[in-house]
Image (tube, rainbow, N blue to C red):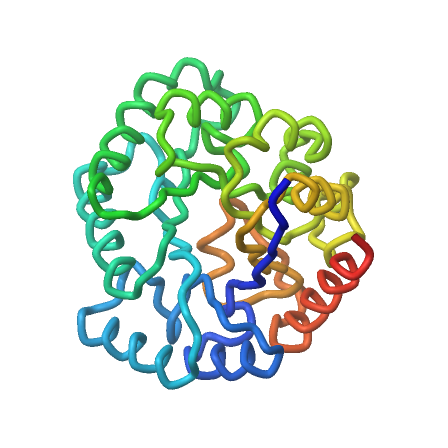
Amino acid sequence: MPASEFTITGFADEIDENFETQLKGLSSLNIRFIEIRGVNGKNISNLTPPEIREVQNKLKDYGISVSSIGSPIGKITLQDDFGAHLDMAKRIFETARTLNSPFVRIFSFYIPQGSDAALYRNEVMERMGAIVDAAKGSGLTILHENEKEIYGDIPERCLDLLKTFGSPHFACAFDPANFVQCGSEAYPAAYELLKHYIKYVHIKDALAEDGRNVPAGMGAGRIEEVLQDLKVNGYNGFLSLEPHLGSFTGLHELENASMPDTLEASGLHSFRLAHSSLLQILNRI
């Protein structure tokens, strides 16, 4: 069995909206990779070419590389304008290539609340197919993240997507907390179903009783067991800190629901807590 090697990265916009402050925070924790989502208060999808070049320069200055683009691709309803959305996806793929990112994270479209997801399967697959086709030949691997209220929110529909496209360049970004928050068992059920497709892991945990995000190992995501199994099976890949332990610029846009105004501001303190919680787990396995 090949040796396992975990590489820590993270959504540093949860440290601060200012990109340079994000890089300083990562450097202070000796983290050499970033999953880019928010840059100076703007989503990565909205950056202009000069802003992307500035990001490139800052990354070089701090010696930090991009693990993935945390894009909003597929995080719209089926009633939204897909043509414009596909154009955005193509721009993001170009941004990923410019920033030497091996991965781009995507979603699989919000399903109308209370509806049977099976009714929308064909439309979802058609749109997902267009997105996957747009990335062909780029060298990028597209990561589908399980997310609340999208088609691929539960393990079985994630597997449906992964089998349908059946490509080494279309893989699973495994998010334990999101499975917990939509009532699925993250481990062993979801993990065992999807483990052969996992090429990226989000380190985010949540309580089963109310879905509240907590540091890794303190919720129902059973992150220690997931990482132990990945280690045994020789996983060589990223563990991306996405703590959601406080409020940060862009959080309301990320969540398809209202967020409590009383949520404490996120920052380096909460990101450091998330990082130390992960390190404790890694030291035990």
